[in-house]
Image (cartoon, rainbow, N blue to C red; front, side):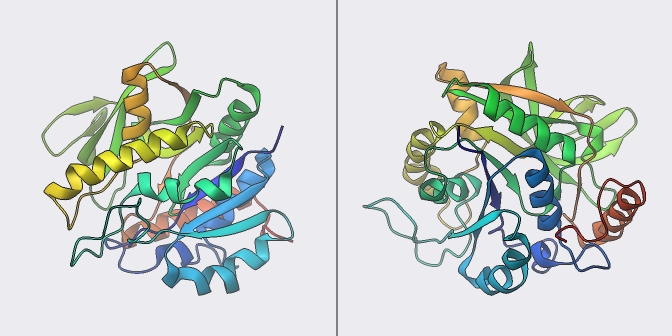
Length: 299
């Protein structure tokens, strides 16, 4: 069986962070979040890293990121562009915003081919245990319509520097029933509260967009993206986005596929806001001090 592929979504505009956060160093050695994600993927057994990026990020990746990884894992760049649309569709005049995470994964279809694959965000630090769980699922479950996601405890995914959005999960017997995007989440006593005052107790599972998919997901992604272009994109042509979780949620609802929730106690770290960076740097330093990572990952 072919080794699973890691698909990294790195085409986001990083508007809240105020810069290209994917290439911002998080340790004194100049390593970035992507280094740690791909390093953890290598240790877990993934065989290739596919980066979905904007054309404007090509130089960063070609000159600074991919070369240091290449001796250890194959890297491939694919480009998410506004005009990467199915035949018969065109970009609305004035639109500059990318089409969203569903479109980003669809962009990687040719690079992934017929191999199982994981999907994650470029600007999130997920923890090594989550990579092992997703990898082991992908190589052990032969059902082409059985997918998975890493389930994080909600209290382990919040920012002290502002509100966040999370896909809050409903599960039964370890399987995902639905994943609902909740906006404006902030820490509160015993859990989290969203912008509309809903309370989610500690231990509630959320999606951090770390998925394990079989290649059978691609036809569904293409179908959903066309549906999105015909509906939401017409209603809001400048800002509408096609979100990745909508596709597995739809497949669950229709009975076409299943999604296992793989629990993890890993603590999410990221740079949703510029003020998040010192906390992430401190966590990386602590993990190195504990011997979880070498000083230089790729030596």
